[in-house]
Length: 187
Image (cartoon, rainbow, N blue to C red; front, top):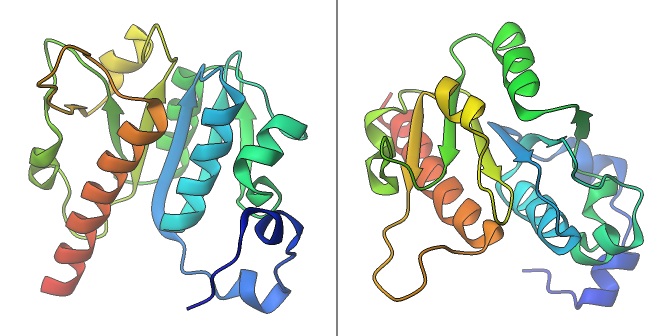
């Protein structure tokens, strides 16, 4: 297994063969006004780790090129496909127009949310999934929650009532991936 330190990761340029060999999964990571560039960079790392199709950066979020995003993403923003949309609602509408049977999953605390471990009830086969994570303080926009197919929440048992956007995004994304992989293997 290849192990690189942060500097080696930032300085490493993958070959065209490596990029072509990445197994892209039907996952789209939608950033709804995520403001902290560390979080944006971390979400690029998550998208790379799971082989996501694309990162969609929306609203007031900073976009590459950005030295702060580059540092947090260890350069992965140069290799992970991404684009900018004016807002997450528009991004989801555009995805739904171009991707048949898209499941939109918002990661948020809401009266309509269900535990993240129940995502398997919504994922079937190799369904494409858009995972929406929101602003560090305001969360996912209400208009986006209204059009989401499911709102997933991570139970909180301590004094704090929220997790960092990267952490919550990773927990939910890997739960979705686990369910997608199980469904695919059952075919």
